[in-house]
Image 1: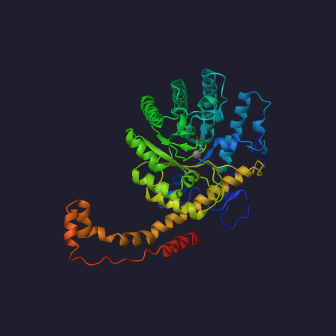
Image 2: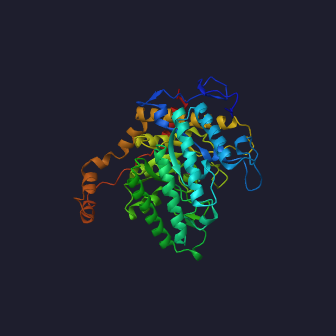
Image 3: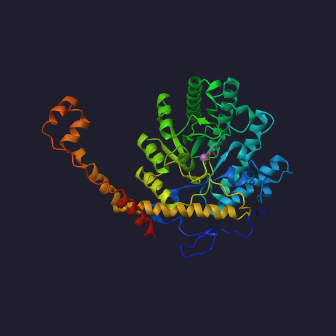
Length: 441
Ligand code: XUL
Ligand code: CO
């Protein structure tokens, strides 16, 4: 058997004193944090597309990376098998409990629907064998409904019902495959579900089509007995100028409109949150409030570049604030942290792939510790409880119960004392967060 990552052994925890680039400094899978092991809290997944399908090409240049499994002189099925051998060797050595894929990441797209389906079935059998052998599980599968030219005007939102039908068939087949591999979730990212110009777009019709499509997806889930969660992944733009699943709040309104709010949750991607003008923590908190928090695509953008850069997460502060909302929401159930992250184009060595993931996993593990410590201390919760305490008193309770009217309040104002503003102490609270991060051990 070919070994693709020669010289890399199973990545071990060595602690913060270690200078070994191929060791964890924070992620210790069996360490217990707030009643759960780090492994169960974080549920890390490696994505297939950036890590195994991407050679480093960009719009200005060709591939740069040392990726022997992407050699173009191989027959497509042999190449797919090689790629899968490399992928599972990587998952196992990294110690990632989960992986994620698009149908055409793992199987070559054929020249007809039937050929593509046969290719996928074959690679699903191969993947099932690797899962069995390594114990790595599938966090989610998804169908690539954005790359082929037929989808240039959208998949479910295409002006042509034949394209809708093709996309529906592709999703049905990919859901069956995900089910067969015991997937914990099924994801739909609306890669071309949006518009570039309203001049040729019937937006109302397209949104109704998307609502029907997602209802069909949910019907299919129940029909095949898939117990995983269906997840939508919001993104505000790119590739289209305006994506319909703009952010979590937009998705929630859409789900309610189509009666899907109890069936579909969100897969929040950190860089997509930033692009929509929100903080990552805001998107998580919104999803938790709406009861639709599902899973995370962990990555990061760049402060000065306004597109989807998919960098490995490095900011402990940003991730601590996100983890805080995840823990407050009760943590993951079927979801997890998928590294929808890619290396920079000059990181061409094979082991850079390990180093990127190790850094991301350590960032998330340290953020988990800091967030758990903030919650355990009660430092923020006590302040917030105090800040809103008035709502538990007579006036606040009467307002919320609806036993007092606008006219009653008008009358009350005649004798009521002027409200007394109190400091919001934002800087103090920011310092509290910094302290918990500094003291994380
Ligand atoms: C694109 C993106 C996708 C989805 C899966 O921005 O995030 O990779 O995660 O289709
Ligand atoms: Co993503």
